[in-house]
Image (cartoon, rainbow over all chains, first blue to last red; front, side):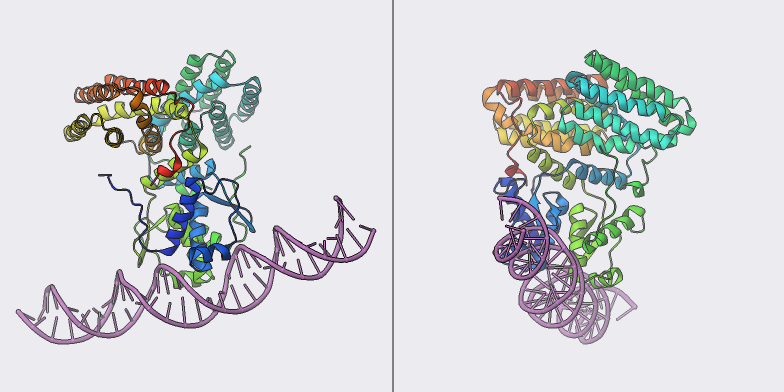
Length: 246
Length: 246
DNA sequence: ATCGCATTACTGTATGACAATAAATCTGAG
DNA sequence: CTCAGATTTATTGTCATACAGTAATGCGAT
């Protein structure tokens, strides 16, 4: 298996166009921020019609390699995280991944995020976390709101950890997983408190710059979540109906 | 931050078209494997021209939601892993992520993969691993080949672990990281042997169904890699020149 | 120089057309 | 009656051309 790369775009002019521009970007001939020439000009230079060129551009556009601040301006851009998140989330949803799969991974990503956050967090960042945590406490009992804040909380921790790779990898997973809270909450009323406790312990550990403790509590947090999922009988259930994605 | 979803596709007919079809897919009105109607027909039904419809289709195509077995047939498909991998890899490369970031994450993903593999691996799968390992041994001294086999090895382990989420998350990261071997090898000649040793220990642990040991050796393996990266002075260097992606 | 307005250039979309070819249909031999 | 081969048909990929709307540009007055 594997071996082959599939580089040679067979025919399809629009694919060649997209491929060529992509190559220019990856090669660095076009740098993020650069503005692309007009469509007419590019069309001519590639020897295709505007329609064809346009199909290629649409492809690059949804590849996240170019972006359109105004309809008149199309510029090169580095793929935005949220785009990848959406896409990966959609893929996982369509693949019908289970809560078990999501949890197994989250069980290692979130503790790592917490550890890194404890390592790098500034005073301001910890304060921001604390504020968010306050909002979580205030939302006790409201599942939807809790989920939303929880997502933000975890994302913020990941950001504080200053590891973009982790950020990219964990985001879509965490999103899918934590959304399951809605299905768990009815079965485990004390869940809100557990969650709050875990979060505050992570924050406290960060304050103390205690990486191990931060990591430990993050793990506890996810283990707890998993227990909830088990109680709700979600273990091998499919996470989230795809329709709910923006 | 965050809050807003950006659902409302402003004008841009082609985006609305893409959005509508996407919604139909996510909603389940169109299921993977379904064939899409002809362009003319769709164009009419959306009230746009073929050109416009086509731009929308190109968008979906590179979103990986539809796929084209033959030019005459366009069908709904679940996003292919390798597509996401390419995209994520490209994004990380353009973001200029460092080896440190990659390693930190890999330090938790690969051990997890090994653990899951030890848990699920069948006799056949372990044999396949062993075979691949043989190829690795045979390739000692050849960096390019070693990288290639190593990638396959790790990917196979992840597959054996039967966690698609992990597979999706780790693949692009591992790809970028392990490619750094090329830059490390010259500085650490004994690297080949270390790698071989680690791999065989993981296999042995799998044979014994010893999850902990499998995990431990996988971690050792990555730690070793990191040490190599340090010796080569790559820690905060940017992984891989983007051009090298297929 | 700065501001407001006219001009220009470019995008988004629409028509219409045509060669190439995959798929469907028909045909005739076994 | 079945199936390989020939023929027709339906679609796709691409091109050419056009036009309204509008962001960007340049110009003239302050």
